[in-house]
Length: 201
Image (cartoon, rainbow, N blue to C red):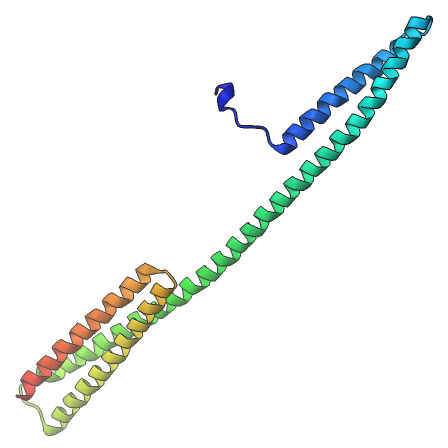
């Protein structure tokens, strides 16, 4: 990666590097002062200047420390902001999971209702296939037909309600599956009605 492509340092890194540089200068001057001989006027003047430079650096260090503390505070604020956002996402994930589970449970119940209807349709088919039927059996056939028609309409309505709820909650797959089941039920109901009409004519 070229120097031009290197991303800029963060405020925290810049503040830490600046503090470290000032601290290195302070330590270097402090060693010079500690090791400086004090046996001539010139040496005393040089030591005095070094001492003044150290005092100035001490002030600069306090500024650098303050900048670093401010940068750390900024990092903490950013981290807390992201933590709050992550927490909100976690809560939304939990909510969406519960919604999905509820929709899936309702779809499973629809599937069970459809299976029950299939069993009742087989019962209707068995009654219809009898070559001869008594008046009581005809009444039974009509009763089963009416019950089937009503129940198929109810389950189709439940499927429509579920499809709308799934679409509203942006779970398109369940919405499509519920709508497909609704269409199958209505188609079967229409065919059942036509079959019953042909038998009655």
